[in-house]
Length: 211
Image (cartoon, rainbow, N blue to C red; front, top):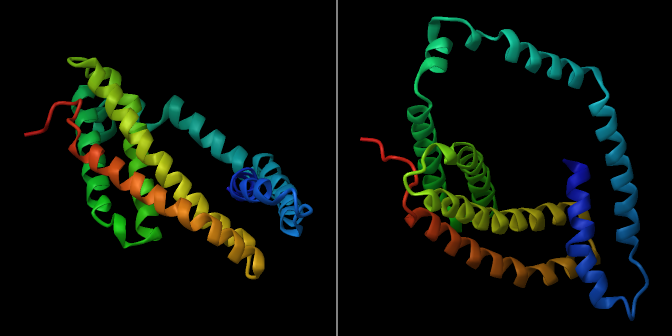
């Protein structure tokens, strides 16, 4: 996560700011410092992927796939496995949409509220992409629903990157310059995100509505 955040900031906000002033200024000390930070973050990520905890996680997952409770007959896990998947999918989608709409009502309450909406909406997106193929009475409805989720997530993702980027800069002149540059961009993204949320909330479900 830290490596990804530095990558996004270097290729996004800092790259745009550098492009705007490259004819009059040398490469910034901030950019040089963040490249050192990124190198260290890459090393930590590699160490994590090669470490014992990650190996144990993979082994646990493979064990669950092969002989987990869901593979046995009877019991709650077996009952869920044997139930029709369409009913499970409709319930999961309905729940995820309800949670996203509830959090969406807090859209204008600030960055933290929009970050929580992003998390809720990502869950809805993953479930919609997985289960969309189950409900093909109106095939285009599922694709349109997923497309609208992606539009909202694009806005929320960029807004989150702005917040994360500010945390990477630290105090000082660089923070003020970049914050000023990002302010108008953030305003546009908030407007686009609000409209995308309204469209998503009004969009018809592609799964059967639960009674």
